[in-house]
Image (cartoon, rainbow, N blue to C red):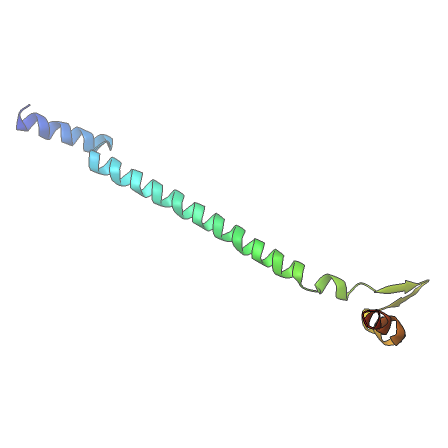
Length: 97
């Protein structure tokens, strides 16, 4: 192949966008973009899982709920602990003696 034919072929490839360097750079750009999307989605999933675990382990859901309900009267856990007789707590501790 002569130099003029090579030059013509390269000119045609550039016009069509099929030159080796262009194709390689386009492929690399596409791979970088896909990788960035995967890392972003993965990071979001990890953050959501950590947030769900922290909220699940907190007492957020239990502070608004009553510990005891008698008829229409609702008692919080602090009120139940204050009003409960101390013998119920000490009976378990003296059983080991």
